[in-house]
Image (cartoon, rainbow, N blue to C red; front, side, top):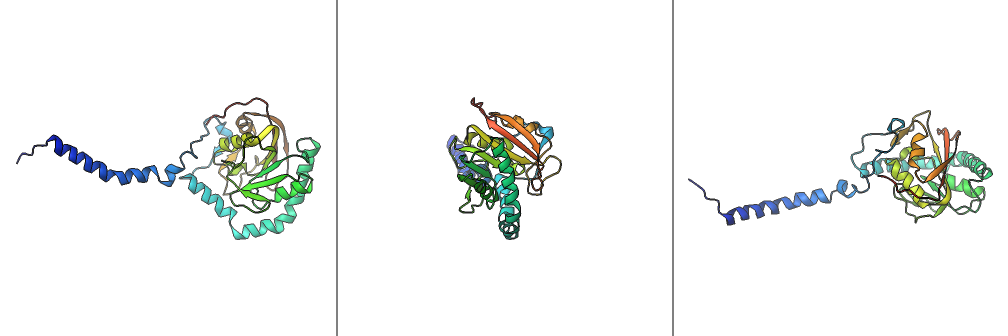
Length: 253
């Protein structure tokens, strides 16, 4: 039997097919992976890749965040951070900050941010050396020392801080975004100090491995390198300091 496909019949088939495909289209457009696509669009194409490697295995930004939260919310670790580590690490951080004060990279009048501060050990150390206007930022808040925030998308206005410190660069899945947010929120002539590990690999929660300071120099497009020196920072061996320049170069993503 021969079937004649008329135009109205073909149009009806098309409309039915379109209607049936709408649920799949909406699932694709509004899935968590798609919602996070704007957050994960940054790449490392301009980084010196031989000296900075992004660890594989993250299927989405949600997967990455959940892995970081698994460490941050671990009750055993949080107890250690607020007891044994609190008393052990704060004096060491205070000595680091005192040395930066002697180098005129940190003032008692500085407005300071500690990135990835967990329970605020670094913030407490800053306040003990006289930098009272200090705050920490982490995925999980710890009032009154630490506010909630993602270092890939800091919850602060442009040109907010005179000084920013972090020892969690290795946890950045998108190093370019991590650095661009620091430079965005730093004031002109503001200082950023990072503690990183070059001679040993970081822990299992790290998202990248750094093998020299060259990728950092390349990433800080709007800052000048101030100094590089060795430190003993609880598994981190190198301190790198940058000062934000007067001129601004748009970051490449």
